[in-house]
Length: 465
Image 1 (tube, one colour):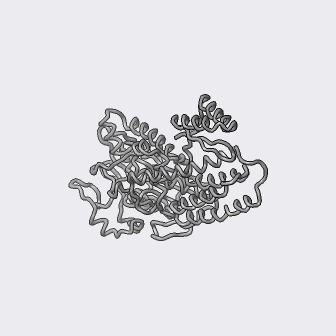
Image 2 (cartoon, helix red, strand yellow; image 1 turned 90 degrees about the vertical axis):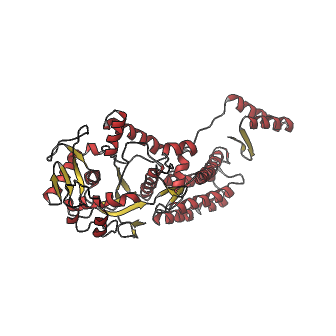
Image 3 (spheres, helix red, strand yellow; image 1 turned 45 degrees about the vertical axis):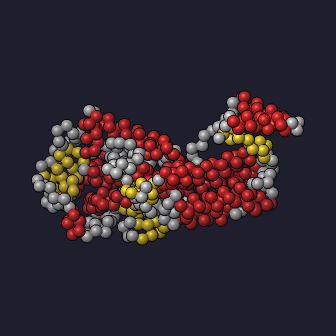
């Protein structure tokens, strides 16, 4: 398996620190509002990375944090006349509703910044003791220029970074590039006691502290959106490597931006959509399928047409699944025929293609193409009176791939009321008695009720329109 490492700007063979195990950290949301569709992309993509690693036999420890103390949360709490804790708890709950709707599995650990204050303070103190940080008026800042490799992830010379740094009129920092590790408390803000006075952590330090606590000093994979490369991930590297004296991350993965109708998503342009809004319009699973329809590092354009195409593609997969489930119940008993066995022997070829796509830097677009290639072959193979055994083998093969991508999880169990069941039975009796006029009448009546019937060699199959 090869992954594109942002640090080296090239694909590298993935070799975990401990054979058979993967330690993976993904930056989570700042919980002050509903997550937007841009947030959904890394959530879905790195959920698939985790699923695929597990599919390949790795034991994955996946950590995704919640930033639950931040200026945005404090401002939201002040606007609503409530506490920061109330705001963060509300939107953590809303996050899980959307994440589960998108088919995103819970992380192994979902730590919160406020639950790791002791670890954050210890890390800040270590940086002070090593000369990488300094306290002033209750704030603590990181000495960016002391870390010789600063800029190595974003590949920006420190001179360029310094030229673009903002200098505040009353700035107490030694250098404009220095960033906050700890912020002195302001009136009305949440705070914790520390050696430098009452205050709260800066944004960047929490991920270094939590990654270190739950995964160790050096981890296999750290991932997030492209916008986090600088300054967030750059600062994480500076903090972690200065404190621990060793490499922080072996593989850095960043997904590309999501555009809305070929424009960058922003509130000022009025093209800002929450996941909840997108799900109401198209369904959560269509959003997930859409996000997987392009290789994760490529920019992706969110549009109505793209989401409708995703809905249609999912419908094809659900139809294939439904047909196979029908054949599993109603197909011929007994062992597979030699022809059927010969077809299932081709499954290894599809596995090889699927694995090759996913091994090539998680190319979900090509993996989806393999699934549809498989579906076309299955549809031909089960056209004529297949055995239940063949139908089950095909269904299992389809699910093997869709489970890796986290698809076909939103199936609605449909049932018919007794009146409709009786009408279907009456139509069957009319057909048996060769009363085709009556059979057609009942079929038309059912169609008007939104029930479509299909006569197959295995019996009548119905679906709701």
